[in-house]
Image (cartoon, rainbow, N blue to C red; front, side, top):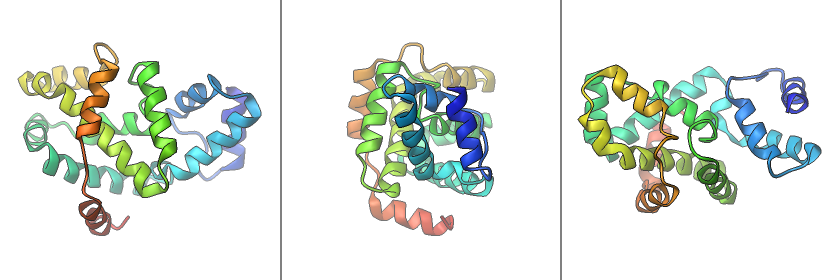
Length: 190
């Protein structure tokens, strides 16, 4: 894994190493030999827009904030009241494609779906749908929490107690309007 990460840092010095990249490399190494893993890793990060730069990352998180407000208004309002922002939970989930946060089987399925998407917009929408689905799965628990620290702890320890089938049932039921998504990209200059 060290060779993959160092090789990528040399290949893309403008990106270098970002915390969480090791989770992606480790996940790919479970299924691929080192050379194929490096190629897949480079392609994966090329398509994963949040690694572009901090400005891009912030724009995408602002876009997600709008998605959260529109699709899960109760959670959005609750998080706003508690002072919880997407940077505190969604950033790690997205940067690692959930590999740091969910059970291995669920991450493998998420990666399969992600790789199946045709273009960057579909991939990004799929990731945001996954975040929304995970929040939907945790909705009643999250809304019952009244402290910042309890809510954040719950968001950061989702691996415990997540059932893969329940998550994917929520994911199947979670849609994002392509037109709405395009309008948000325009609004946030992405």
